[in-house]
Image (cartoon, rainbow, N blue to C red; front, side, top):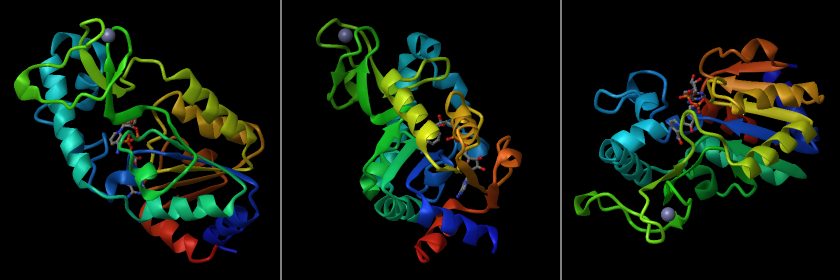
Length: 241
Ligand code: NAD
Ligand code: ZN
């Protein structure tokens, strides 16, 4: 059997599967990943803007970057990788899709059990009291402030140096510990604590598969590493399920 055939067999026999997705899954939809030139906006690297200190000192620049990203994301559609995951979810009794993406494309494509580890770029909240807000951002009218406490409104995403929402992290860790098959898909496997989830799954007996365009620190630890585009490999696999 080829490695792809073994993976198909594992999916068919899985009672509980967890998938961790990263920016590579949305690359074919036209959303740039963070690594490499395409991730730059103006002259900034994402790490320089996506952190609380940057927001406190230059909220206008950080908001301008998010407004640009929101516009980009509003225009794109899910791709074959997102739709393949919807098909796989239908075949498996227990299925958890853990995503580091903030672009909402898994929900848009029809995935049901989605855990958003890093928040959702379309949502906003108060930086001081955490109150969610549905106010539409209009930067021309100035920066947005909280109606309740007057604090600055910020994007509801997890920034570098911040902790994850405990609920989301608990769900993700439980899914990793309970699954019999774990797939790491289109993620550089570098950003903690998401990066530890595949190891947690493996330590608890799961079969570990990775799909990525290039090797990552995780690749040598996997049972199967499939090199290539997530959208191509996954859509091929769904033909055989
Ligand atoms: P990353 O940018 O660090 O890595 C992307 C990975 O995807 C790389 O390993 C790359 O080799 C791989 N890849 C690229 N195209 C692929 C394809 N077509 N098929 C398979 N693999 C492909 O992204 P990350 O690991 O998700 O972590 C960075 C952080 O950036 C995350 O916290 C996430 O919140 C954020 N982010 C999100 C989005 C989004 O929501 N779409 C986009 C950029 C960054
Ligand atoms: Zn507030």
